[in-house]
Image 1 (cartoon, helix red, strand yellow):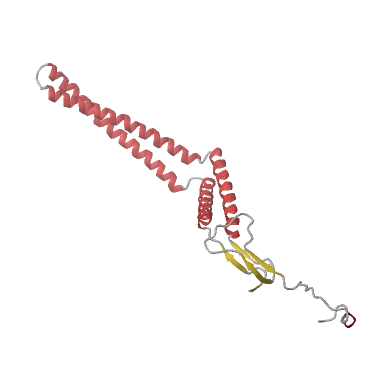
Image 2 (tube, one colour):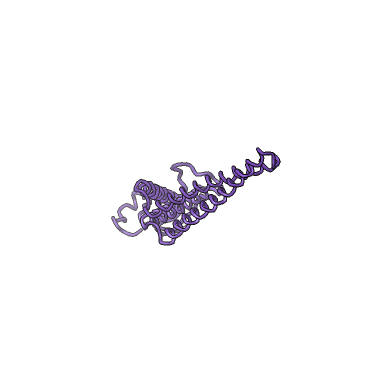
Length: 212
């Protein structure tokens, strides 16, 4: 077959390489968006949300403390009655259990409040420089891998380097390609020569550059 320079000769199967390329592109996009968000800093709604979470944590802690205060008063009252023999041990144990439960709830809500305060501070301060550098490094790495796999994907399509004729095609469907393997040969028809033998009796009739 006659082919033109740049014409596609064949396309090799490389689903795994294509999948790796797609994944590297996705990683690049993700890292780029993350870096953009870091540079822009916290949005107004993020700050509002962080402040709201802190206010909720403060309110939950307030409620827990009030509940614990009541259960502590009940426990002290029932404890007195129990030691006087006025209430059963079951009533005493129940009051003690409720007091312990409410006390643990206070500790839990205090931890939540501390966490929400720290989160609010981080949101308002913005990202740390080391975090930004880490994301930048990840973006550079992802782009480099995407470029590398793009070259591999491009190499799956074999094109003719010149105008000519496909004189050999040494590849079968399903065959595994080896490194430096010749897949096809394209002959340049614009620069060919033919060797012929002319008898001595005819030599005088032939001149250089004459059409034959």
